[in-house]
Length: 197
Image (cartoon, rainbow, N blue to C red; front, side, top):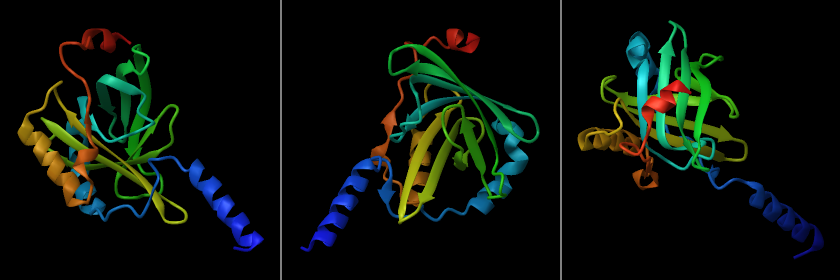
C-alpha cells in the first residue's frame, strides 16, 4: 500500500470512529407518507391528549428513560408538547417541544424538542384511542441514515394486541422489532407529580 492510500485509509478509519452507532449505512425505507398524512390531517384534534411511551428503539435524544408521559395540545395547526419522566440520573425531568407540519411541505409532521434537532414524526398507525406507532428517519450524505421508533399508549400499559399491531406496522417497512426496549411505566411512576412539573 503506498503512502497516500495508507493516509486515506487512516482518515477513513478516524472518520468512521466519529460516526455515532445509531447512524448506519443505507437509506430510509419507503413509506407512503402522503396517504397516511392525508388520512390523519382531519384527525389531528383526536390525536391531542396524553400518550405514554411503552417502547422505543435506541435513541440518544430521548433523555427521559422511565415513566415517560407526553401531553400534546393541538391549536388547529400544531401540537404543543410537554413530556415528563425520569432521566438517567433518576430525577424527574420535563421537556418542552412542538409537533408541527414540516416547513418545506413534506407529507408528515415534524418533532422539535428543546436540546434536539427537528426530525420527522410519521404516525405509521393509530386508532387515536389506544395506541400510536411513531417512526422517524433521516438520511445523510454518503449513504447513511438514522431512524427511531416509538410505541405510545393512552394509558401506562398497552394490550398485547395493540403492541402486535405496531410491530406489524414497523415490520411492514423493514424495521427490526427486536430493536425495541420497553419503557418502565406503572405503579412505580408518580404521574400526579409529573403533571405538576
